Image 1 (tube, protein in one colour):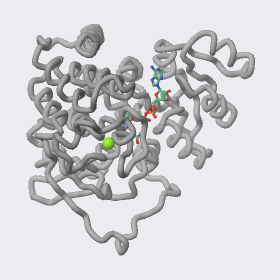
Image 2 (tube, rainbow, N blue to C red; image 1 turned 120 degrees about the vertical axis):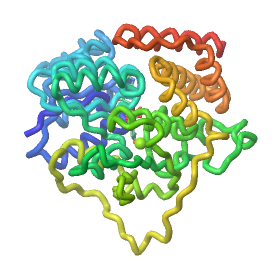
Image 3 (cartoon, rainbow, N blue to C red; image 1 turned 30 degrees about the horizontal axis):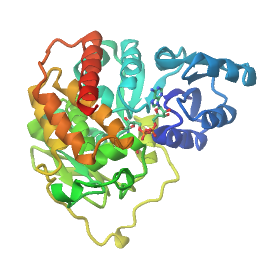
Image 4 (tube, protein in one colour; image 1 turned 45 degrees about the vertical axis):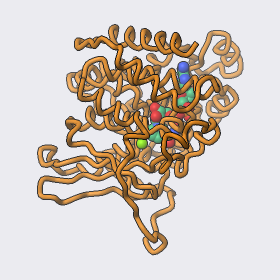
Length: 380
Ligand code: NAD
Ligand code: MG
């Protein structure tokens, strides 16, 4: 029986993870749930899964919940997330938080050698070197939940990393595939949130519209699979049937295919290293008329190019990329800046950054904060 702590259980990944668990009560038990704003859903999850603990955002909410659920332990705020990630007898942590708030819990779990199923890609973009070093020193496993990285890890199973020629990350192209700069000037938040293939949280949906999501995933792949940027390629594949591929030195290519349903990679991350049945709809090849591929348009969608640039530059550039993006996506979602300002302002912030190459948790957090402050000054 795996006992799982779910950070961000009220989100898109979190709820799909609970769906997998609900279908496998003999295999999995929920030890911790966590919510931030949707307390009605958190309450439902406590009723349904009866976890030992739950993380809430503040003390008043914890006191209110405690009256209703006296047997549940309530943990609070960012410290609560760290406590959840290191919760006593859990043997797996699913980090399904969105953004930098996920970094310290991942680090805390890594320090005590816990196995981590990671959806929170921002953790690896900002803290990749520190997290990977901590994981290798303490013996835990880092299992990717992102569909592309899950696909790659499935293609790599049983193969030697030294035999990799290149990783091919597929991208749907997002809601604005085919558009040029002119056509992106006046796009609305609602248009940007309408992803053609996946139903996801708001932040990652905007990242998919700018192609920053693929940029963050290139960096994530670099850390997870120890690959240089030259060996990580992005290929637009609008059908989202091939979730990613690996080409080996003998030019043989392995691909992982399946429905565009995140419960697939979540199920694999939970059952790893074995496979377990699920109730997903399988592919019917006779109903697929074509699989299309094209190069990403890096001239229009600059964020993907910036991700490659920062990965090559190394050090603190990736922290700045991630922090500026998170902050700017927030401004766009609140209708404070137009869509194209996200990439334009990221460029300005990157150009004025003085890099740091010795990265501790303290320096990462302080560069993250400084960057957000710079973005706020640019936007007001
Ligand atoms: P979401 O917005 O739906 O959910 C985010 C979760 O984090 C929620 O439970 C929310 O309560 C919690 N949260 C947000 N801010 C918080 C804070 N300050 N303190 C405590 N909790 C907070 O996001 P999502 O789409 O589920 O994405 C989660 C992560 O998974 C992201 O890093 C995303 O890039 C990655 N991911 C998501 C998908 C997807 O299909 N949704 C696919 C691949 C990767
Ligand atoms: Mg992905």
